[in-house]
Every structure is written in structure tokens, then in C-alpha cells.
Image (tube, rainbow, N blue to C red; front, side):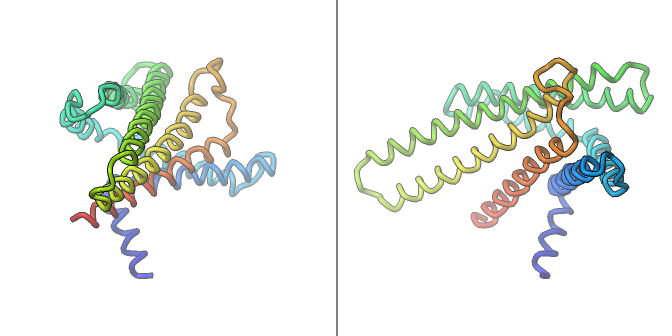
Length: 243
């Protein structure tokens, strides 16, 4: 019990961990609130309260993202043109992904400032642009993961055709590849769940834009959020094991 509480405290003490928890609560509240509101034809007080709670958490995350630009700049600068990547396709998609993420933040900031009446511009086009950049980033991330899975499968097939020397090293490499493939598959699922919501928030007329009920938006976001929490806990566990 004490260890569980300690893990939760450690998670909430980090910005990344707290954002993951807030995101999960935001979409989880929208999921439950949407289901309750639909079952009672919108007359459920609990459902309304959960939807309002979800909206406040979403606004909280938007405000906190005002301070993410420099972190993204540092990450993009460190990655550069991806010269450390062995595959040129992965490198190209990663660079484009970083560009989309970098442009996303200022567009969202302008939209937020317009809604807060800090600047006198219409926020609609800025929200649309930021959503489009987010969708582009998600799509690029999913395609990048697919490419990495293809490369890992090639690597596994090649290792199985090699001679039987250094069997322990080969088995360790195969386990590492399989674990990475699992994480990439989860990344694809997470990206597609978020991408479905991103399209829902596009202007009407684009695929299923505006057609998702609240509970479905909450479901997609909750799935993506739980995957993000799992990935973060797995990466932290691996870091502790190797340190």
C-alpha cells in the first residue's frame, strides 16, 4: 500500500507524470459523463458535473502547455536532422513530426489568448490550424512506428538465419526487439485513438468531424491516456533497471 502511494506521489511530482494523470482524468470524466448524460437524455446532474470537470481539466492542460515551447525547441535541437537514425525514412518522418509539434504550440497559444480576449483575433482558424498540426503529428508518429516495426521484423528474421554462436546475445537482442515492437504497436494504437478525436474536432465536412458523441471522444482519449501511462511506467522501469 505504501509503495503504491509512493509511486503515485512520484508520478504526480513530475510535470510529465502529472499531465498524464490529468489527461486520463479529463477523458475518463468525459467518458463517464457522456454515458450518464446519454442514458438520461442529458438530465443527469452527475453527468453534467463530470463534463464540466473534464472541460476544466482540459483548460488546465492548455494553460500549462504555454510553457512547453522551450522544451520542444530543446528536443528538436537535440534531435536535429536525425543523423543518428540508421533509416532515412524514419529520420525524415521524425523531423517532420518535430516541425509539426513545434508549430502546434504557438498556434494553440494564439487560439487560447484569443478566447481569453487577450488579443483581438478570431480563435476559430487558430484552433483549426493547431488541430491540423496535431493530427499531422499523430499521423506521422503512427507511420514512423509502422516503419520501425518493419525494420525490427527484418532484423529479427536476419538474426534467426545467423549461426548459433553467441546464442545468449542473440536471444537478448530478440527479446529487446520484441519489446520495442510491442511499444511501437501501442504507440500506433494511441496515435490512431487521438487522431480519431482530432478529426472529430475539425471543421464540419471533413470525414466524421463533429459526429462523435461525448462518450466516444472520452473513450478514445481514455484509451490513449492509459497507453501513455503504461509506456511511461515501462520506460521508467527500464531506466531504473539499467541504472
